[in-house]
Image (tube, rainbow, N blue to C red; front, side, top):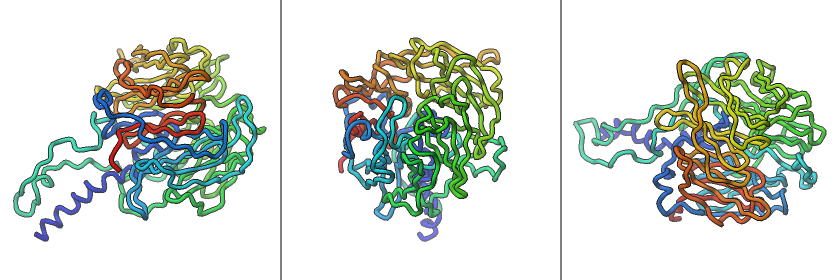
Length: 511
């Protein structure tokens, strides 16, 4: 019996501890747009699917307001998430948010309560002006991996086959342990390399038992970067100077022990561009965008080799990680970009897409920025500040790009014909008021009609193949959504209204 137990123990541990992969930063929503590539795509989910949303059950799970002030200073950023955190109080699922009053908070996402809340920057922040919100603007993030996450399997993380029982051959343990096929762990990380290296980066190894301190990162209005323990919000070290005060910072992202963020609109007298902070040496690097504003709401997109891509004015620039030295650029002449880039893999290539002010979507190969692979006009997209794009690959292998336009969500297909890559129309959603960038969760497209002074915001779930409505939140959201966006994890979808209320939709569970 002892030999049977010893043989089975590693398999049992692998099954029990599999969710800890999420705790290592693989699969959680850690930064704006979900991942370093800004895809807005959650590959798998245990409960959310087109079939499950067509049935009763998906609804408002809980809502909460930090009540730290009034007006726009109380608006919450889209949360970064830990779906499976092992702490001193057991297993937890946590969401981390910030607001314009320099408040950072963690929610217990299962219980719908505040785990901890701290004011980490100046209590007084500049008043909002057009283009310069004031306060903390870049959201709260966690460290992010650069590797592409696995493509979807068509089902969530739950059981994929009926339970069985029985006794196997001697020393083989139970039949279920003998025949189970464990998920392959992510490949080992690539060896250390210089900033100029261009080799594709592998996902981190699954080392679920090693101790690892985890932080939430917040950039406050005084330009300081804070590192807070995810468990209690305490800061083990003083905050580090990153930006001049009162910058309009967007798209904070942390990887390989370096933090990056973009700035726009010269708020606080800060020169527009992209900034990098080495968390070990505290050295700050700055790429200046020449007075042109950095486009988009989620900042730079990062390819698996570490190259950062930022859209500013009429140029899409490729920059070296850490040093921010230019590697190349794509120019669109007199036009200006209006979205952050999105990066995705297509037939072994790393492609990148962004939109311009004239309503054109530009698609390029990151290996050659001299000319686009394809361009296409978005319906009713002219003059609309797209903000960010979304991209996903469905279970048939079709690659999609989603773009919010002035009154709907537009879906495009990336196709290859006779060796040439092109864009083809997919579908257009119902009419929406100033839609936000949608997200894709296990093949379901979630989109928000942001509303206005007279109309409440509505969250919609759309069929990813047709754009038809599957579900909507009705009158649940009390007001418009003026900033922020969506995030998702653990079979929940998060959105915050302009009054600072965090709404969480999901499948209610017994507590």
